[in-house]
Length: 530
Image 1 (cartoon, rainbow, N blue to C red):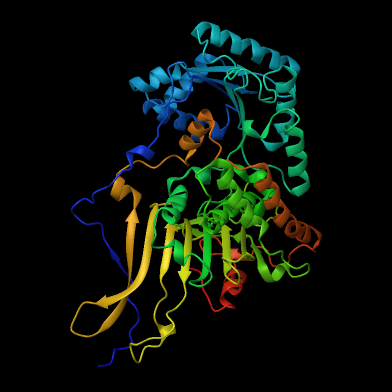
Image 2 (image 1 turned 135 degrees about the vertical axis):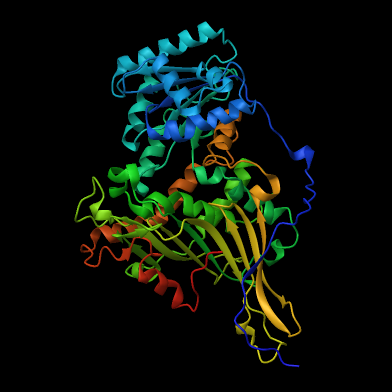
């Protein structure tokens, strides 16, 4: 009997009508309520506070994770008072009972980030709030969240130190008096030199265990699930190495342009904005070895080993391993959109990259010779954040006349953006009297199985972890510096090269520049999205 050579049919195994039985390990399901604390949000009138922080805190409040003594003090240049702030929060969240009660926990102080007097007022305001709330337990238990432009970080840290709102945890102080935490948004530095300088400055005023460098990707359930998937199941971990895996792709693609971040983005670009943090964090998660325990330092030690093992790109050969692009006018979702150089507040001659792709190797026993392809870009035809593991082809096909390389290789995909979940692609017999094969996907979708609402960019989990003093999902000093150490030579090479004559080099609504396809196709591979 011969098997007809047919084009594989991509199908999908749907969720069964009978609900799956979900076995929950109750002894591992911890949901602690943090001690009473206050959060001071610098930049409280900004976009991040209203789109992410306040809604996330509200969800924690409704889910009973926040103690009744919890409070937030917003600080920003914009002039407003407590009532103005609370009205804006109610307008944002709606006038339901929980929102009205939640808004009462909010206070506001306007001031100048560069003024010592403003920080004295901040001290007095904190004392007033605690006194009025009779909040003795929350004394000195404060999280300072810097939702501000990067150029204000050192200024804020200096003034907080001057008024003794922050100070190093010396280890011998009373637990209540040493409970000080500071959250830093990305970018943490703009290259290796600036990151080292910033780390050195901050460590004059804080210990590493008080520093929380936030990366919202790490708070996503689908990202954390990579760790659970790999190290709590015996099926895949034995295959997680160079013997069975052909290559790995990591994509973070957006249909959006620069939106309200134009000024920042034109000074930053895709490589700084995405690779040094989000992309390298995903790379480390997918490639790391198993820590001995699920412990913050042991877990982060294993991620560090991955970044240390990255093979340096030879000087003068960056163009062979790294691609950059910039979007031109095009169409997204049937709507015409302008190119990057035509965006508001962008220079018409800007050479800032809005797309970057990279080929990497990890020089260790597990991954020797396995290429990792990473790409990220704006104004792409489809939004997707996904990790795809392509396994090697079977060594020999028994299904004559099909050859081994004519059968589709197994694909394991982690969907991190929309429709969070996991899919496994494999060959199966197509129904019917003929012996035909089809490539099918077995899909797991979080919303279908658990029916839970998605976290708003995962700030809920990260804010709760910060309150609980858990740093496992926050970047450590060495991770930040090692990532910049790898990225900085590429940035310097671009800065020292003549301006690009081929920018813009991809249309909005496409899947990036042709050079990105060449990067992977010359190895006999192609980009994949499930």
